Amino acid sequence: MTEKLSWDQRYRSGEHLLDQPAPLIAGVADGLIPARALDLASGTGRHTLLLAARGWQVTAVDASRAAIGILEKRARDLNMPVEVCVADLEKHEFEIEPDGFDLICDCYYLQSDLFPAICAGVRPGGLIIAIIHMLDDSADVKPMNPAYLLRSGELAGFFAGWRILHAREGKPVDALHKRAVAEIVAQRPIA
Ligand SMILES: C[S@@+](CC[C@H](N)C(=O)[O-])C[C@H]1O[C@@H](n2cnc3c(N)ncnc32)[C@H](O)[C@@H]1O
Image (cartoon, rainbow, N blue to C red; front, top):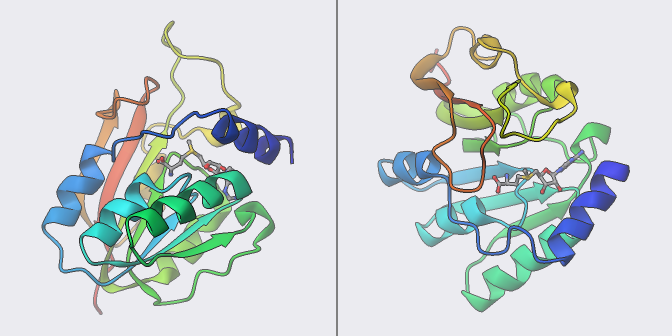
């Protein structure tokens, strides 16, 4: 609850309103045929709107009502249809439809017990793109609850048996963030 409240306050105070999409999402989306996508913990929708602009049918989920309100208004102003849902993923208020999505994005949100549902939610042949903060003791990053941070090698472990198209750990290529990230683009096997 504290976490949700603080996100609402951050969004209402104008944080994250002019976000550029993470280059990894933009780059991967460039090479894909638009289909059905899920943006988990979407925030105000920088990736939702990027995908919708490229013709994807996107569902955005976030626990912050403020974030989803901003996303809805942005989508309306741009005349882009997006499906939105205010839901606390930790409380499993949103069920990821099995085999429901050609692409699932999980950016800067770690909930380890959600990975089985994420894996089941990607259609065979579909992709997950995840960019998630890691433990990082550099002097220029703020302390953060380690429960929400990945250890080295941990992200790939959630996608055992998948085709790994991209994996990287290190400083983010995303103007918004400083803390180290783990990135993965993985494809669910067809058989
Ligand atoms: C760092 S922001 C990332 C937003 C977006 N994915 C991006 O890359 O711009 C983390 C997001 O997770 C959302 N969040 C935190 N806890 C959540 C929960 N339990 N269920 C759903 N969303 C949650 C916050 O509201 C916030 O929008």
